[in-house]
Length: 214
Image (cartoon, rainbow, N blue to C red; front, side, top):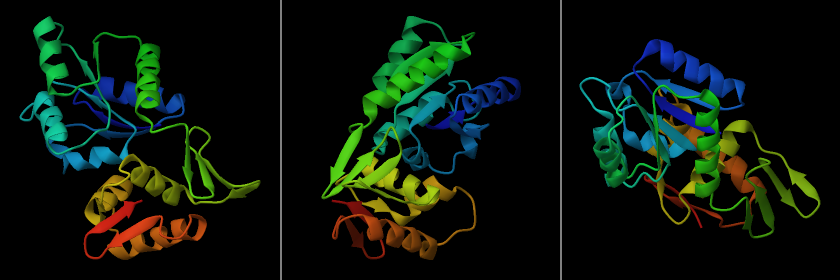
């Protein structure tokens, strides 16, 4: 499970990240809302854990922008705000769950797992003669297991989450590589790796724009 953690408290953020990683999650920690270059980055994650009190840019603003721009990644609000009005505001903005501080770390993990299960398209996806096991993170064609690099797998998951929609090259770069100095030629290389194992015409190229999983 890939989790985007947006939390400005350095002690809490570090402890949440360590606990989630202990439970097998891959965590990217953004310490300030203004550090988030583009909310579309959230499309590359299975879930977002979002604090509300972040300084200049509030969690409510980030949540509203995510939903306004079509980001469907489930969001769990993790905050010290406890009133019913605060909860109503966040749910109306598109939050999927709400957990108040202080909290039990194990409960956070349980809630995240429940959210991810709810939002996965299916545990198994069939693409032509290829079966994708999302829970087991594996691909098979009949009795043959198909090998993918870790990066190609993350790219496939991103395309699966956005099936039927064009995912821009910029979004792919932000979601998979973040601020690393990687260009579109690297994206093309991993698209090529996916095309080697997926049926023909599964991935459609929109030249100069991005890619779509048919």
